[in-house]
Image (spheres, one colour):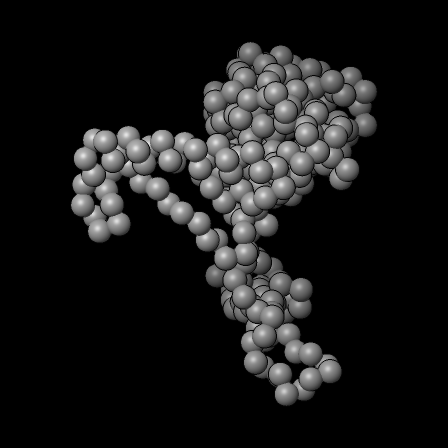
Length: 295
């Protein structure tokens, strides 16, 4: 596309791309052959040990019962007393499976809620699997006792997003699960203190990449924001500002200085903050980094 003839083979990603514009010409699987055992050369290329991705939150074979309340196994409609019977059986099954703290989450209400929240947020399947694993681990340690289901699901999803550095704010996850931001935040603090593993924080560059893609900013504006972001992390006056609010203010200032004007409403909508917060943060950023006065 750029007219260059230089191609580079990336051995880590198994991709052939252009050295100038980065266009990917050819890609292949990272592991195109099944693993072989050095002790048994006869098993070479037999496919042993290779299989589909299995979610850690589910069972090995995903077996179980599916109870419907409208039709039977042959597709015929059920009468009212049979529908009432199967509704009662489904409630009993969900109640019993949710009480098993160390078993799979195949048919529990939490698993369906996590799948629904993952679909609303548009996160990949690995985040959903990590949220199921964190939920099961926190339930084993008794961290969710006495807390509502939306708060526990939101805390698990937020912890999974932070484990994989996926830029999702606490307010977005609280809106997706139908709970308040404070309730999900308190539950996440309990998970963060109670789990034996460390849950890292989401870097500011992850929010920058997400907001810049949604606002269609040029690479020069992104590099300018990265430079200001490196200086802002060393400034003590900006230590108390929320990460996504600071990134949104830096994007707004860099876009204004570079001539790629983005309205304050657009930046506020993308970063999930209010225009008042963006205005106050942008004024503080302009005072520290310089720029045109805020109209």
